[in-house]
Image 1 (tube, helix red, strand yellow):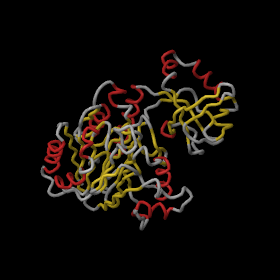
Image 2 (cartoon, rainbow, N blue to C red):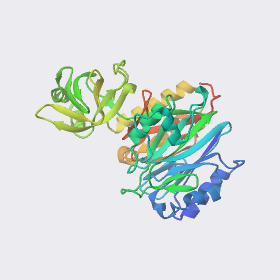
Image 3 (spheres, rainbow, N blue to C red):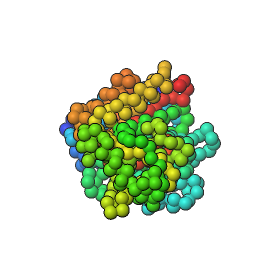
Image 4 (cartoon, one colour):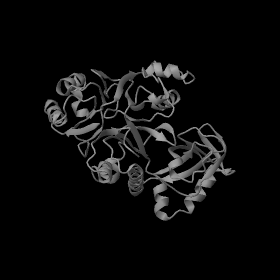
Amino acid sequence: MRWVSALSEKGDFHKALEECAAKLRDGSGGPPDLLFAFPSPHHAEHYDRMPELLKKAIGAKNVVGCSGGGIIGGGREIEHRRALGLIAAWLPGVEVKTFHVTQETMPDPDAPPKAWREWTGVPVTSADSIPSFVILTDPFSVNAEELAQGLDFAYPGAVKVGGLASGMMQPGGNALFCGLRRYDRGGVGVALTGNIVVDPIVAQGCRPIGDPLQITKCERNLLIELDEKRTLDVLEGLIENLPPEDQELARTSLFIGVVNDATKSGESKRDYLIRNLVGLDPKNGILAVGAYVRPGQTVQFHLRDRKTSADDLKERLTRYRKKHQPGRPQGALLFSCLGRGENLYREPNHDTEMFLEEFGAVPVGGFFCNGEIGPVDGSTYLHGFTSCFGIFRPMETKS
């Protein structure tokens, strides 16, 4: 298995493509089995012909990609500037299956797993043939949350990582690439089966405040009571006891973590799915959150800031490296939120450099997303303000 990542900031698309292609061809020994392509919207005039031009320049057997408001590759993260990022993989012993799907043909949530597998065109022939997925969707035309839930239902135990295309603010402006075609609607993806493992790392970048709380009364996404007290009363009491700097942070960066597994008490921060607070009813003391909740679930309020985000990612990368020593990843995809990067850290290349500090010169490619797709506690979700890595290694690598 071999991965190569290339990035070009050249203003002319054809020159940018040639610069990337030259690096991918260098000593490759043949066309790659899989190519991920991520152009910034500055190259939008070439979107329609891009798959054809990629095929001509690189000859990859399979191509998947999308537009990005920021591009990651070659050890750099390019934001608010023109860029083209390509990451190629040579995958002996791996079956690669690409696909394009649409919301209009998405199976009903109650449809059987077979319907979802027919929708993607990715079968499961045995317990040993569970695929791993990379999913890229258009934020305007596909419900990524429904898609993730459907794939979890159809492919239990399979890893799914990815992101929502970005760069344009109106429907039809973003680009999705699959094979020799460009799409402006739906979602594209690749399923990988065989001698490959995709390890996900999802860094939500939050720290808990206060204590874990049990939902004692709720309705849909409305938190009515926590520990048999009005939710707003609990929250106000919590904030009153925070240090001044955290009180100020809570005004703009307060979130809630939800433990979906009722058997877990929230003792580990890895149990929490971080969700936004989306509304407040002061009269009745009710808080609306960005997830459906159930009585008996554990929740905890969280804060997000620059240091917490950096510390969270560092801790997760270090834990992964220690777990998988002495093996090393062969390649990685990084799906990072548009709200991270320089907007959060006030410096370029933060998450990529942190990854390279842990693993050395491992090729990394990806883009800044309108939303990130990755698992928390065994289920796949759509996230925000997250960095989600898909780390690739051969199955034979001892862990």
